[in-house]
Image 1: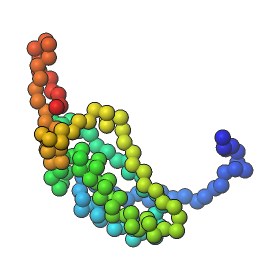
Image 2: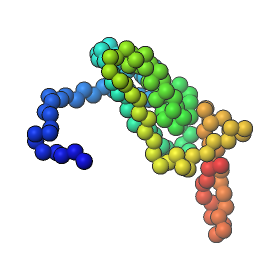
Image 3: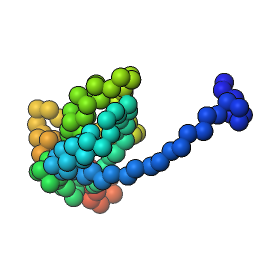
Image 4: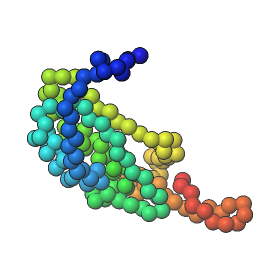
Length: 139
C-alpha cells in the first residue's frame, strides 16, 4: 500500500467552495449548472451523492410535480449531469461522473404496469396484521 510518510505527501493549497442547488427543482439545477460551468473552466469529476427519503404516506412532490424520490434521486441528478457533461468533455484531463446510492435501493419496488411512479409514487394502503391492528405498507 501507499505510505503516508511526509516525504510521499504533496501539500496543495486547497479551498472549499460551497454552491447551493435544490435537486427538487429542475430550474435550480439548471441555474446551478450554469453558475458552475461559468465559474470553473475545467470540471474533472462530478459526484452525485444527494438523496432523499420520506415516508410514502406524505405523498411529497418536487416543485415540478414529480414524486419526490424519483424527482430528487433520479431526475435531479440526470438533469445536473446532462447540464455539465459537455463542459466536462472539453477538459484536457480525463473526467468522470460518479453516482452514489444507498441500501434503500433494496426496498424499492416499481410496478411499471400499474403505477405512475414518476408523478404518484408507490401507493400506501392499510393492511391488517395478525393481531388485528392496522399498519401501513407499500405495494
